[in-house]
Image (cartoon, rainbow, N blue to C red; front, side, top):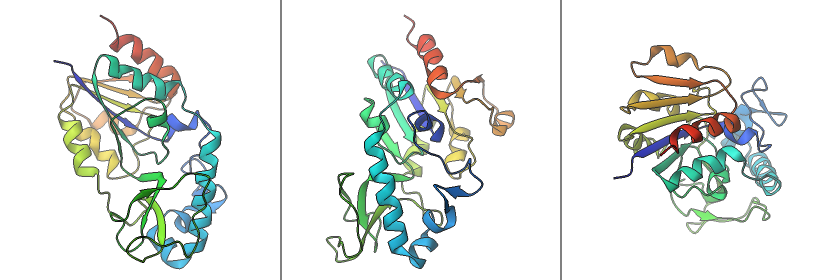
Length: 232
């Protein structure tokens, strides 16, 4: 029986493809206050600003490609049952070849009802802008299918169950500062646990499990891990 690997990935994986992160810029994301473009309150205050902002983010995705870290994670499917739990809203894991991806914070490629985020979900090609007046099937304004600050994380329970059943658990490219995703590492019962990040997250010292830290950026760290895990 194939062993199960569960990955928890964050912005550090996509950053090497050129996807900007907001937590490295003092509360700004592409020049905007995070509260204005990444919170449900921001949506209520100024939905047009939010639609324009995410239309720009969606267009930016057309110019980026999966990197070696995405492809290394996908390659492990040759030998393992691989589940990717990601905090990233891009589709680079899927484009990199991963076939079982759980998005905790939503997906840029999708839009949904603003009345109930978990309904009327559909894919909208990146080149098509999302505008005021675009309606979901329930008649409400379409909005980005993104989990903003102040909203529940629908997939967190599924993610917890996947982590708890992993034989190998790997954290890649996340400082583990955003809850509830940061709590997932405490659900691991795996015999092998790895953290790949240039900076060792402070939570590591609080864990009662055996963890190997690979203190490298995502592409380099995944190359090292691939050598370890693909050995006969």
